[in-house]
Image (cartoon, rainbow, N blue to C red; front, side, top):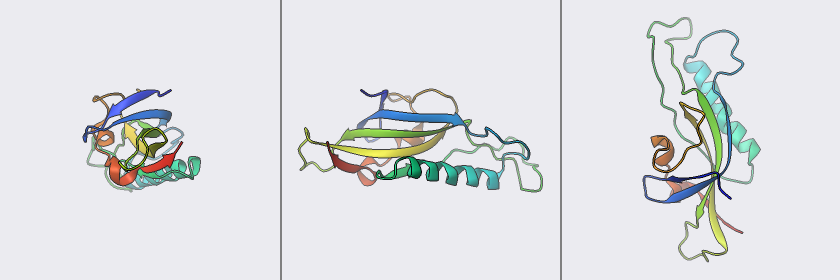
Length: 143
Protein backbone atom coordinates (compact mmCIF):
# COMPACT_ATOMS: atom_id res chain seq x y z
CA UNK A 1 0.00 0.00 0.00
CA UNK A 2 1.37 3.41 -0.87
CA UNK A 3 1.27 6.56 1.26
CA UNK A 4 0.58 8.75 -1.76
CA UNK A 5 0.99 9.07 -5.51
CA UNK A 6 2.98 11.84 -7.16
CA UNK A 7 2.59 12.73 -10.81
CA UNK A 8 5.97 13.68 -12.27
CA UNK A 9 6.32 16.43 -14.87
CA UNK A 10 6.86 13.66 -17.44
CA UNK A 11 3.36 12.33 -16.67
CA UNK A 12 4.64 9.20 -14.90
CA UNK A 13 2.83 8.33 -11.68
CA UNK A 14 5.06 7.19 -8.83
CA UNK A 15 3.95 5.89 -5.47
CA UNK A 16 5.55 6.91 -2.20
CA UNK A 17 5.97 3.80 -0.06
CA UNK A 18 8.14 5.20 2.77
CA UNK A 19 8.92 8.71 3.96
CA UNK A 20 11.10 10.18 6.71
CA UNK A 21 10.79 13.85 7.64
CA UNK A 22 12.50 16.08 10.15
CA UNK A 23 13.23 19.71 10.80
CA UNK A 24 16.09 20.92 8.60
CA UNK A 25 17.81 22.89 11.34
CA UNK A 26 16.90 20.69 14.32
CA UNK A 27 19.69 20.68 16.88
CA UNK A 28 21.42 23.79 15.52
CA UNK A 29 22.52 25.44 18.77
CA UNK A 30 24.54 28.36 17.47
CA UNK A 31 25.47 30.07 14.25
CA UNK A 32 23.05 30.78 11.46
CA UNK A 33 21.89 29.16 8.21
CA UNK A 34 24.60 29.87 5.63
CA UNK A 35 26.28 28.14 2.69
CA UNK A 36 28.73 26.01 4.75
CA UNK A 37 25.94 24.81 7.05
CA UNK A 38 23.58 24.13 4.15
CA UNK A 39 26.24 22.26 2.16
CA UNK A 40 26.77 20.07 5.22
CA UNK A 41 23.00 19.53 5.59
CA UNK A 42 22.66 18.63 1.90
CA UNK A 43 25.60 16.19 1.92
CA UNK A 44 24.26 14.69 5.15
CA UNK A 45 20.82 14.16 3.62
CA UNK A 46 22.35 12.26 0.69
CA UNK A 47 24.59 10.19 2.97
CA UNK A 48 21.68 9.29 5.27
CA UNK A 49 19.56 8.18 2.30
CA UNK A 50 22.42 6.03 0.98
CA UNK A 51 23.03 4.49 4.41
CA UNK A 52 19.34 3.82 5.05
CA UNK A 53 18.83 2.16 1.65
CA UNK A 54 22.25 0.89 0.52
CA UNK A 55 20.88 -1.45 -2.16
CA UNK A 56 18.78 1.21 -3.92
CA UNK A 57 19.68 4.13 -6.20
CA UNK A 58 19.58 7.55 -4.50
CA UNK A 59 18.86 10.96 -5.99
CA UNK A 60 19.02 14.33 -4.24
CA UNK A 61 16.72 17.06 -5.52
CA UNK A 62 18.65 20.35 -5.53
CA UNK A 63 17.14 22.57 -2.81
CA UNK A 64 15.62 25.99 -3.40
CA UNK A 65 17.39 28.50 -1.17
CA UNK A 66 16.08 31.73 0.33
CA UNK A 67 18.20 34.78 1.11
CA UNK A 68 16.21 36.82 3.66
CA UNK A 69 19.16 38.90 4.85
CA UNK A 70 22.18 39.71 2.68
CA UNK A 71 24.36 40.97 5.54
CA UNK A 72 25.25 37.75 7.34
CA UNK A 73 28.34 37.21 9.41
CA UNK A 74 31.68 35.44 9.33
CA UNK A 75 30.37 32.61 7.14
CA UNK A 76 28.72 34.78 4.52
CA UNK A 77 25.14 35.83 3.90
CA UNK A 78 22.16 34.17 5.52
CA UNK A 79 21.05 31.31 3.25
CA UNK A 80 17.99 29.29 4.32
CA UNK A 81 16.92 25.84 3.19
CA UNK A 82 13.24 24.85 3.27
CA UNK A 83 12.27 23.88 6.81
CA UNK A 84 11.66 20.12 6.31
CA UNK A 85 14.15 17.57 4.99
CA UNK A 86 12.73 14.38 3.53
CA UNK A 87 13.85 10.95 2.41
CA UNK A 88 11.32 8.92 0.44
CA UNK A 89 11.20 5.59 -1.33
CA UNK A 90 9.27 5.78 -4.58
CA UNK A 91 8.13 2.97 -6.86
CA UNK A 92 6.57 2.92 -10.31
CA UNK A 93 6.11 0.67 -13.30
CA UNK A 94 9.28 -0.70 -14.91
CA UNK A 95 11.39 1.72 -16.93
CA UNK A 96 12.33 -0.95 -19.47
CA UNK A 97 9.22 -1.59 -21.59
CA UNK A 98 10.51 -5.06 -22.41
CA UNK A 99 10.15 -6.27 -18.82
CA UNK A 100 7.07 -8.09 -17.60
CA UNK A 101 4.87 -5.42 -15.93
CA UNK A 102 3.51 -7.98 -13.46
CA UNK A 103 6.96 -9.05 -12.25
CA UNK A 104 8.93 -5.79 -12.38
CA UNK A 105 8.79 -2.35 -10.79
CA UNK A 106 11.21 0.55 -10.78
CA UNK A 107 12.47 2.11 -7.56
CA UNK A 108 14.29 5.27 -6.49
CA UNK A 109 15.17 6.75 -3.11
CA UNK A 110 14.87 10.53 -3.16
CA UNK A 111 16.14 13.14 -0.74
CA UNK A 112 14.60 16.62 -0.89
CA UNK A 113 13.73 19.69 1.15
CA UNK A 114 10.24 21.19 1.37
CA UNK A 115 8.51 24.01 3.20
CA UNK A 116 5.91 22.00 5.15
CA UNK A 117 5.65 18.62 6.86
CA UNK A 118 3.01 17.40 4.41
CA UNK A 119 3.32 14.16 2.46
CA UNK A 120 3.73 15.10 -1.22
CA UNK A 121 0.81 14.08 -3.38
CA UNK A 122 -0.50 14.33 -6.93
CA UNK A 123 0.42 17.29 -9.05
CA UNK A 124 0.68 19.56 -6.00
CA UNK A 125 4.01 18.08 -4.93
CA UNK A 126 7.13 20.24 -4.87
CA UNK A 127 8.19 21.18 -8.45
CA UNK A 128 11.74 19.91 -7.86
CA UNK A 129 10.38 16.55 -6.76
CA UNK A 130 8.00 16.41 -9.73
CA UNK A 131 10.88 17.21 -12.10
CA UNK A 132 12.83 14.01 -11.39
CA UNK A 133 14.03 12.25 -14.55
CA UNK A 134 12.70 8.88 -13.45
CA UNK A 135 13.77 6.95 -16.54
CA UNK A 136 17.41 8.04 -16.09
CA UNK A 137 17.62 7.64 -12.30
CA UNK A 138 15.36 4.75 -11.20
CA UNK A 139 16.33 1.09 -11.33
CA UNK A 140 14.13 -1.80 -12.39
CA UNK A 141 13.78 -4.60 -9.85
CA UNK A 142 12.04 -7.93 -9.97
CA UNK A 143 9.33 -8.42 -7.35
